[in-house]
Amino acid sequence: MEPLQIAEKIKEAFPEEVADVSQFRDQVSAHLRKDRILDICRYLHDAPEMDFDYLVDLCGVDYLGKKTPRFEVVYHLYSMAQKHFIRLRAQVPEEDPAVSSVVAVWKGADWHERECFDMMGIRFEGHPDLRRILLPEDWVGYPLRKDYPVQGYSGEDDWSGYREVVEKSKKLKEFEWGK
Image (cartoon, helix red, strand yellow):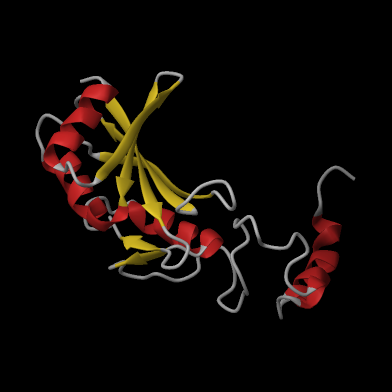
């Protein structure tokens, strides 16, 4: 099935949830309201003609000052059996940056959602273990947001473990290759 056909099927099944369908360079995106993203993903996974059994990627996008709502969660889905692909883009407002977790549909969404939470600050409601995955638990802010300061919020003292990491890297210099 072609991506535009898949987008039309989503529109038929969830007419109130599809805000737009766009196509750019032969890639189709279904722009969705966030409220029923779990239902839409379950439909795409379970419907035999869809059979989207593989969540390729999930990531967050920040449109600060360019678009409302400010955030999107982008899902790239693939069907191994049907060999078709679709991109879902769930709109997430800045005031309540939260969307339903899809871990119940694809177990592999677990770490993708944790990374998106860690770096963008988008919460995934119903996630079994939503906590930071790349940064320390005491990290302040979300580094992939466009309004995050390049030097962090307060420079090198932003994170309490900064000096410890710098000292450890100096000690480990002797083990570097190619000197």
